[in-house]
Length: 136
Length: 136
DNA sequence: CTGCCACTTCAAGTCAGCTTGAGGTCAACC
DNA sequence: GGTTGACCTCAAGCTGACTTGAAGTGGCAG
Image (cartoon, chains in turn yellow, red, orange, blue):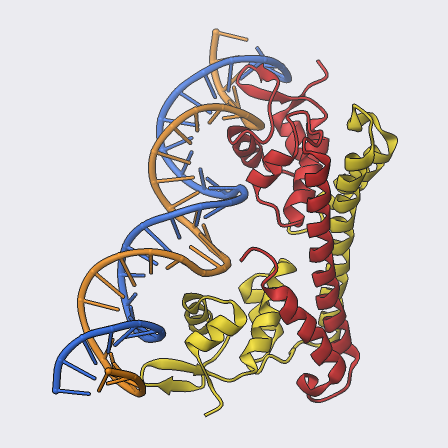
């Protein structure tokens, strides 16, 4: 059998077995059967788990993620929706870049009082605009 | 007085009053006093809240954020640490870009089977590499 | 001076996303 | 054929980040 025992999958993916069981329980992944009691998984689940990890990084809930991909892990959303999600990601990325720039700036700017530094203030201005953007 | 009543601050920042109280309770922000019972805040708290919002977007916990900025909202970490945080953000940003690219790709790629598309597979390969990176 | 109402406190509740614990099972190794 | 150990189930517990509810307070408009 070319199936992965839950323990093997856990090791390969770095995802705890308890989490894999939980993911299966909520329908996020599926096992193909059992060997004795032990869940067996299809190798592509590894890819799925990578997608799930990415999705989580992107701030999506497991439920969101569940809606994005079919059981085989292939994306299952209409094009428009995909582009919307991508756009949202772009916005989030810009926010993170801003924060990163702010951090780097204060790391390098020798000013005693960052709050008075025009560059920092500008970054914070953008920050304020972004603040309400995500998840009202 | 040029101070902001909690209600005003809440409206200006978009952060619920209950959340502001919670933030004060955990020491993330500070009020400058009371008017009757009502908390009064310094205007710079608005900037602080923007920073907090950015920090949250970046995936930091409130505790992390608390450690990053002093009570006046100015960053309070050694340069090296700031750069480390910035580097971590860069990595996170790359992950998000990857996910975004993956989404856009599948939105535009007409292939029936994304899992077979080399470009998609390459994106997923990176995804797997990234998967374990953040928060074991 | 009365009433309103946005605030106050404090405890408890909620939600996501898991983890932990107790008690059970079973394929495999010796 | 017994022991082992990684799995199983199911319920309960946990953390983070808040929200909600009940009961109280006090500044200000009328």
